[in-house]
Image (cartoon, rainbow, N blue to C red; front, side, top):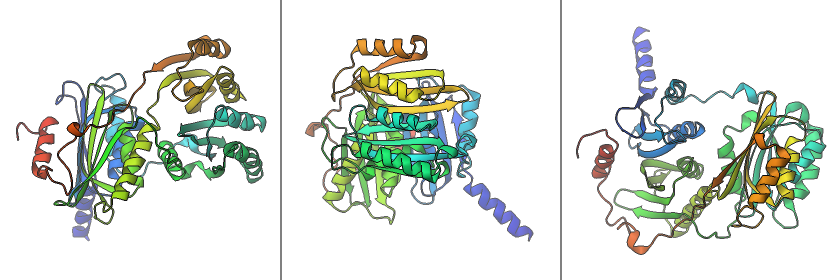
Length: 430
């Protein structure tokens, strides 16, 4: 029927997000605005697209109350510049303008992922890659994070290297390494690559499932308050800004089954302040002090996992069997601990990024060790970038907002919206 066809077209138009990318509004950043019908997970999808492009979110306003969703992001590239690459702008418009689940990259076809978790220690990643090399497994891609004595790692192997018999042998050799001398659990799980929708999100989930509850110091400032009048819980994060900070926070809230209805993000002089108005999926706010503490702790963990202090080593070299085993063994022999790793191969080339520290927590990296590694793996192949320490500051009583008990002092939501629309350049005054 003709009227039904017109109705379906109307529904499609309403459900299709409108994406506006504007370089004229802000003198220092590109504005990315997304309007669409609200659906669960839409905020994470938007932030994930920006994070995957290595873009920095300098300022943002989030609103998804009612049945409509609006996000405004002020973004720059890694060098702090506006977006001028037409291919990047086109990719953002296409990705954010559909909300269809992205198809798996063709590079992941025919791959199996090994999900590794265990008790971290110096040299563990080197030992893992040594075992895989000894078993003639070609590592196509890998991601590894360590935090508070725990390791989570995703290793992508070709399917021919990960049949049931081979996986059983790999598990028999890796599980003892992952458990070490502690009573902590360690495991190896093999899944098709298509089952891992996003590597960073899966690493967060693995770390969350086996998180170490020992407190770290210093920690990011995360507060969770109640706004009883409006039925929200207000989460405030204050810490040094860094790439993918917003993604890590939104990912954690989403996986903990909270919905973000409103939020503001602002950065100034290298410091980030993020504020989120959240509820449970059933519409209720956080109801207990224990739950507030759990949310605060989980967000602190998520932020700390990538708040790296040490040296970033980027290795670009022709790929060969045993490359990862040799490189990580060189790190270990020179007293370097791999805190994070990002491994990928494209054609015959390997592009590997390692974040290394001294073998003791907080220990500075010995420059002679870096030079020894460069000589061993090839001076022209290794790019060294030092990361300055990022110390988290504890929130002082005088620095806190006036939002205490029962939401006293929380400003009216209308002013909240207008203030941020003004700061984001969407209205002239409020």
